Image 1 (tube, rainbow, N blue to C red):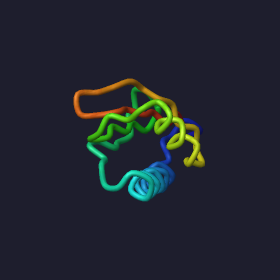
Image 2: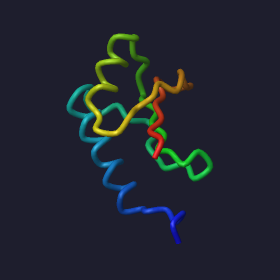
Image 3: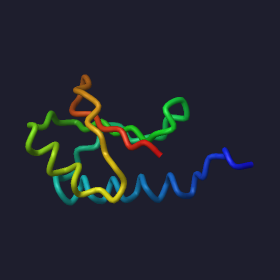
Image 4: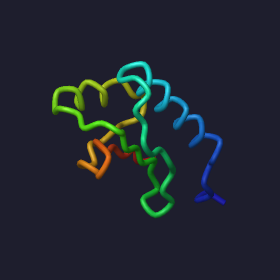
Length: 81
């Protein structure tokens, strides 16, 4: 089936996201999971970031990262697959 979810790829991307966030900001991931409804990986940090830091962080990922607003715990990002 062409629309099956490739969880191996999703886990690989999540590992990459975790590695980059930890390298750039330290361990501050509050939530990182795949959302089947959005067909995207959602990330929420445990810190709120300034606009320039958001831009700098987004440029580090090999997959396109979009700012997804401010959550209860911190800045949110979405990675559409």
